Amino acid sequence: MAKASSGTGGWTPPKLPGEGTHAPHRDDPEQRARVYAAIRDLPGVCEKTSHGSPSFRTGPKTSDRMFASFVVAHHGDERVAVWCAAPPGTQALLAETAPERTFVPPYVGKSGWIGLDLLKTDDAQLAHHLHAAWAHVRGKKKAR
Image (cartoon, rainbow, N blue to C red; front, side, top):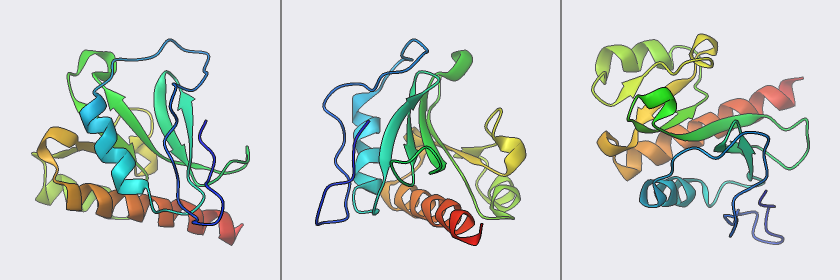
């Protein structure tokens, strides 16, 4: 698990895969690097392997919530994707306006999360959605 770097408020990706209870899933280092680049400047972000995939949380504490997960070929769907939290209404809007690059991910889709097909999503769109996910989840924590 990566820790927030001191002083800059930014995040540094780990050099080795995190520990987890599930076997690691397939990987796409080039697309994973795009995800790392998109979240690099978000304060407090930590990576933890969850269900065999890199997942990103708003901080290092157990109570800090996950806002995104990098997933490759989940159950054979052949997508290289990011699943991320989304503000209310975003999932329905994207299903209508961008069905070629977005989808409702399994498990977390019922909570309003969105899936982004990374091979069809540009860097600006990726950063926008990951920053929105971080802010949405971080805001929920502060409201508690």
